[in-house]
Length: 305
Length: 305
Image 1 (cartoon, rainbow over the protein chains, first blue to last red):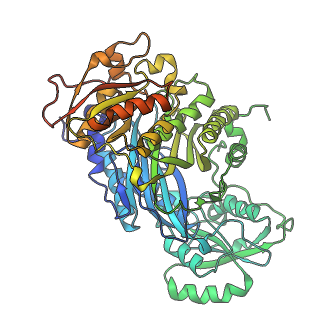
Image 2 (cartoon, rainbow over the protein chains, first blue to last red; image 1 turned 90 degrees about the horizontal axis):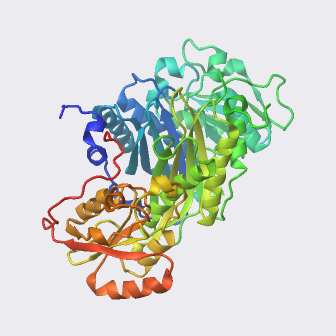
Image 3 (tube, rainbow over the protein chains, first blue to last red; image 1 turned 90 degrees about the vertical axis):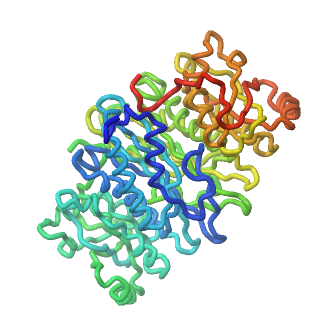
């Protein structure tokens, strides 16, 4: 057998056995990879459960030449970002790999190394997975299902924004694809948890499809309008306002903060996260009082470009 | 817009909004579809968590002409079968749809109706989902991540088989694809839960890749050998022994029962599940004492046919 065989030469059990060697379990895992399903110890009293699933597809979320480790990282980090956006703490994930048969084992191992490294960094156990072959023409994909816990009093939804609240984003926006940030980003888990624990956000979500898509979604969930100061958008070097609005895959936090807490937010943020920019980009308005030009653009999974 | 538009005409938010109308939540759901992740009430004290993910791919697990509702059913029922195979009770699922852009909305709605109907039948909440477009050449797929609970004392793994145990299967094997049973099967959830609650199975798994693949996996996990009475295999009408061994996708239960419990198993099973055949097909042997001809064949996701 070749040093780096194709998966069709190895067969499923051998492929899965190779991938499983990369997984590490926490004390929460009762039954890990290799059985019909994972069995896990319950969370502490007072905690709610969180469940999220998402995927990355070659040719949509990454290019064929993307390094395998970063594909694994991105697949997991997107879900971490979402669990954080509920104020939660991710604990266990299960993986599905959709694999063209003519794929080298080393590529799958690279993806799993990326998954495992990021899981370790965020103290997540990879407790199981499935692999499936794809028919001719299909491109590789990685689906992650991530569960976690959240303190009952720390749940952060998209629904809590009220007129008068300030609208904030972390970091800078735009240019995620050409820069490679869409692959290598750090999910703002600690920041979101801190906002939840300190009661500083009335509504929060992560920015995955671009501010122009995501801010209207948050406003719709909260039943409010908004005013955006486009000139104040924190942009990555070389990005236009339009790129900051519509490029997507920023994986920064978008949240609202009640007026009475904004001074405290500014002060405490600077002390806690001195290296991460926090920018007020607008205000929440009553429903129907939006600025006249509605936002448009951003990432849409189905519309023709 | 056409009465049955393509998803590329509708855009992601409209597609997701249509699909979400089909979802029903249980009192366990704190935050359901439409936010960054689902938030769920914890399980009762003494319960462990279960997590499972799996997918079905057009051209691998179903044909393009398969009715959409049965695609949804199969995607969820496979995971239900696996959660049952741990002795567990499924509670919530999240869905990922991988969708070629030139797909009609009605097909996605049909898949979601199938998911929703099966979810309702097994009292599972569909608490969230994602959709992604696929590049040209990709075929539709449905990934399900299913969580559940299991009583600490009822966990059924593949590891508990001991020499002397009898080997049993439920129902009949073989011919799953040509008969359409691979799409329409009923997962043996109640049966597996009953075996777990009554302590009648020492090891248990569901048969997804064919007895010829799955029985050696169970034996390997338990560190034992086995003897199979091929002539005793319960076959579907018109199926050969080889088909019963290797066709796969039977979704019947394969389990072992200690010798001292076998008479009770036979009697109680007949009373509890009078319509479902239960057959003893062999015995567990010490490791290294396998029958001379090893089983071969069965479904392998990667090997060339």
